[in-house]
Length: 180
Image (tube, rainbow, N blue to C red):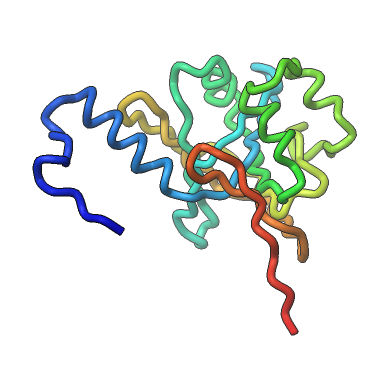
């Protein structure tokens, strides 16, 4: 591994260079792939997200970061009921659908025979590694994104299955190790 000299390091005083360098750094931060879903009076939709993190277990709370310019942002903000579906390794195509990388329309995504109806009608992925249904209890703006604090009210965990992560701008399947 080679170190960068001071002359090779981009200055963070240039906002465009700083933004580009930050995005490159975040591409090296491997993260679980999730499909975040919502349903309610504002409609039903979902997004693929890797910017999801636990906050505390008492009460069980997570944060989900979402770009405020996303067409789905207003739906999540209005409904305030969500499910964080942690994707198993075999659902890369589903992740691509909800990331908008395919031509599959939103209604067709939910027509796939993969979904159960959860609390308040929110779609829950049947074979998710974990599904955490809950309420957006707080929403904070940070730059171009909203940070949604989600208090989980119902949690389901699968005992087996591989994981799907996003690293270096690509999806990767991570096998579960077998315990001997």
